[in-house]
Image 1 (cartoon, one colour):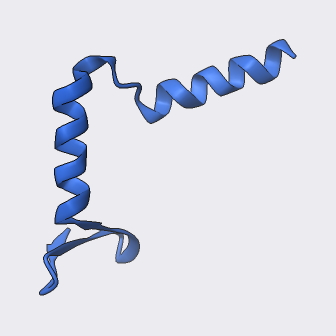
Image 2 (cartoon, rainbow, N blue to C red; image 1 turned 135 degrees about the vertical axis):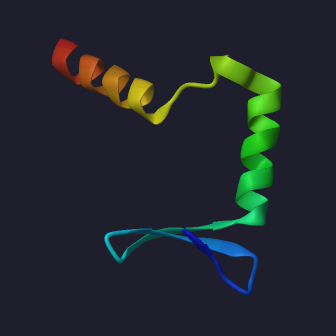
Length: 57
C-alpha cells in the first residue's frame, strides 16, 4: 500500500491495483466496528452462509 496525495491508499498485489481505500472508508469501518464489534460478520462467514443456503436448496 502507498499513500496518494488525495489521502487515499492504493492497495496493490504484485504491482496490480486491487483497490483504493479513502479516509472515509476507514472512518466508516471503525464506526461499524465500535457499534457491532465481533458480531459484525466477516466476508468469509457471509460467503460460507451463502454456500450453505445454495447447497440446501
